[in-house]
Image (cartoon, rainbow, N blue to C red):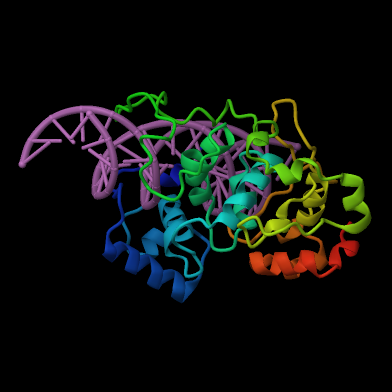
Length: 271
DNA sequence: AAATTCGCCAACCGCGAACCA
DNA sequence: GTGGTTCGCGGTTGGCGAATT
């Protein structure tokens, strides 16, 4: 139990990875595959702990990592999923092919969380929005978390979302949706405008309808399974297939698949 | 031009769950 | 059944660079 003793830092490199280290790790995993993280550094000749290797691989070196800006579609889905799942970044990342939990977490902490918290003006178009965005108090580079966006533990993911809800969504009648599936709304500057879904539907869609809508602390909680254990994905990237119904497996690949799934009248099999 | 501020993001830390002998 | 080890997750930190003053 507890912290891994295999990550003692004596003689190990810390901090940013060098190009050489990246190459070594990538070559090793390409040749021998993932897993056995604790032994990889030794076998590959890296002066890193296994955790560090795993993190580097998952967050940066994997070939299927999608780098670059979070699209509007992705942002919408992140916000929506966060509303449902809370800070379960790995679960959210599992629905965003090529995105890592770390990336989504960072994104949320910097941009999406602020928007949800009541500044709907989009800051995401430019890296700098100092004149309009919510300014934090001075951010000294030292220990202490006062400079963190005030959303990690205080956030009310199931309530604060309202400020971001498009007007059109607020009037959606869940009954009508149940009967006919989600109404395909006009694009509203978004390819996936029909992500304006009832939360219950989205949970169904995600195969997460065994999740409480809201726990005592405002976060959704995954209910225990038959074995009394909480079901979790084994990896950050597209690995939570166990949470998906078979008919949804085909939707895992990307947003376009999801969109076409929603448009294709296949909802009946879900709802 | 220099100093300051602050956003972004990679990486680390600590914990709990899962696994295994 | 128990204890040690490994894995995976979420929270947090700190460096860097761009924007602002």
